[in-house]
Amino acid sequence: MNNYITMVGGQSPATATIKNRYQPVAQTDYPNQAFWMQVYPPLENEYRSPLPHTRALCPWSLAAELGEATTPSPRRQNIMETLKKGLKTIRQYGVAARRIVFTEDEATRQISVWVD
Image (cartoon, rainbow, N blue to C red; front, side, top):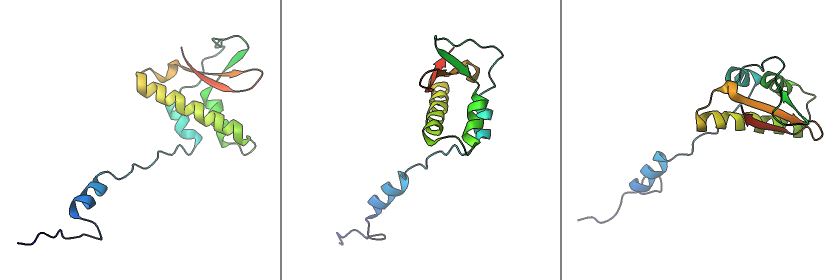
């Protein structure tokens, strides 16, 4: 009786099966503003920000900023992080996209996510 394991591509069959079964999932890419415009509705007229010294931002204007070449890299990164955080909140807590509010601090211009 043969006690040797037949190697497949330098790996045992069990190892090859496990590695093929648990391949890393490709990262989801959010390449353009159209994606975010499909996720979030535009901001209602005259929406009041929930905090003093902040202003509410329309998610469509944030998505438009992503498409502009003149948007600085730190601003672009802050926009992308907040849009993703809003999407994560929608998925995690099952809230409607219209309840997600993006606010910008007037002094620092940092954007944050709120649930209305």
